Length: 135
Ligand SMILES: [Zn+2]
Picture 1: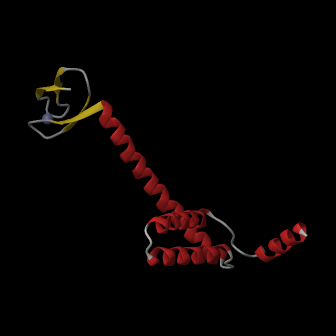
Picture 2: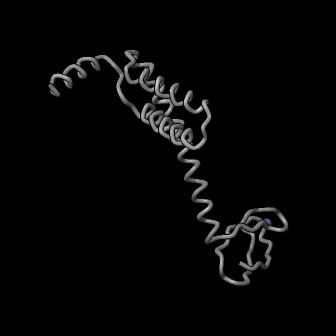
Picture 3: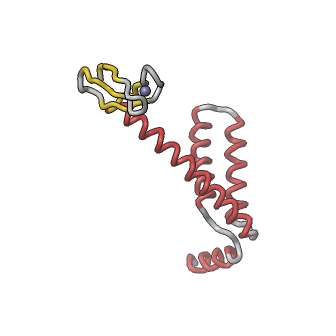
């Protein structure tokens, strides 16, 4: 029985696009909207969830494989960019815990100095101006 069902499903999926990262992401988005909709009882969230589910199923069962593939590639490029900038922001925030950014008083050059070293003399790498700061 289960085998027959699996076979039927496999047959149904022949020539269809199937799951990809973009559809997975849409699935996650649905989940997020369902959770938000649970707390914020607004019909707009149910509608958004419904639309997202429809889009996801449309993509999974689509026979236009090249178009779906192109969409997924776009999504991958975009998400890599977002992930990259998120990592950068995270790195910068972590860096602020151990380092301080000072601006050179004469040329405005930003200088990264480790924290917790007491009073230190910083010399600007750009214009060689020396100044004293509490790190
Ligand atoms: Zn300077």
